[in-house]
Amino acid sequence: MRRITAALCLLLVLTSCAIYTIGEGKANINPPEKVSEPETRIRIINERKAMAEAERLAEEERREEEARLKAEAEAEALRLYLENAVYEYPEDLDELVIPHNYRPERTHLELDTENNPLRLLFLPLEEDADLERVASSVSHLETDFTFITGTLEQRVELSKLMGRDTVILEGGAVLYNTRLARMEKDYAIFNLNGDKDIQVSVLDTYRGLPSSGAEIDGWISGLTGDEKSLSRLKIADDEILFAFSSSEPDGNDWNIFTYYPYRKDHVFRNAEIMRKYGFDDIYRQTHFLAEADPGITRKNGDVYERMDFIYSRNLIPVESVVFDVAGMDSKAIYAEVLMP
Image 1 (spheres, rainbow, N blue to C red):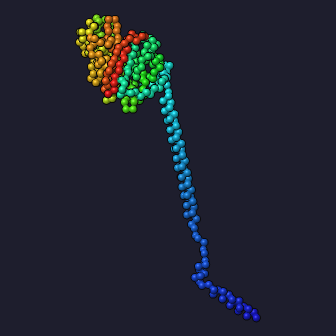
Image 2: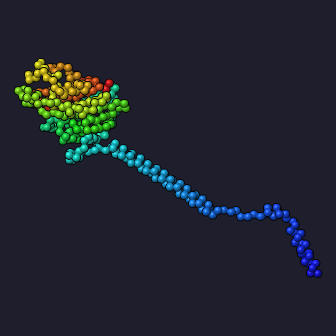
Image 3: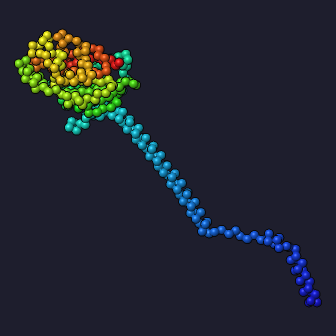
């Protein structure tokens, strides 16, 4: 009986094993996928590095954008400040940096140079000038540019009394009503309108006159001209205005037919230099005869001379007049010029 049972079990086992072939058995085997553990760690590390680098670049871009916006805001704030700043004169004028732009009015007028001339005023101040009277005397005059020569203290005080926008240069002051484009120690450039600029300079080398005709020869022998100072003028191709209180008169004013017996034919260097540079003497261009229109601006004793000039270059002189101003012994000059 036991033998029969064992035989049946063996037959059953053999029958069940015969159900699968070897190929089918192999097909049913699913071994686990082998993964290199070090390779997996390197990939994770690289992914983390890439994410960190992307985050760093994004943060850098954010900071750069913040810096750009901050710089733009600061530039705009500076522009508005500069546009509206008055730039008061310092109480101690030894601290004044030249050039200096004083702007109580902050004017930016566009001038119609096609239909209107430029209106110019020149105030050559002497030491004893009463500046309050001077300011009161000319306050009614509408000018585009007013030139002032004299001491630095006088120029600053008269600028404040007149309440006009002003550029203080090395050689004088320029009061203006249009847009200042640039300023240097010896000149300033103004934008009159969209396509018209003009350069403006002022120089003061006046050192006084002798008190009598008998001293003229000695005075003339001591004159050496101001070529070094005049050489600092920036001679550009553009239009130029130049107000000059000179140490010398103009030889074209000196001839035996004028009212002043001490005069004789003489060539003065400064006037010749200005002609060489291509400048027009506006007063003499509009008053041709020195005998009839001497244009005297200074006097001392019995010596009377035209020592103050408004010169122009590449402009058209229209008219000019020399006149008295309350508060100053020297004469003022009013002139008009056209832009070509």
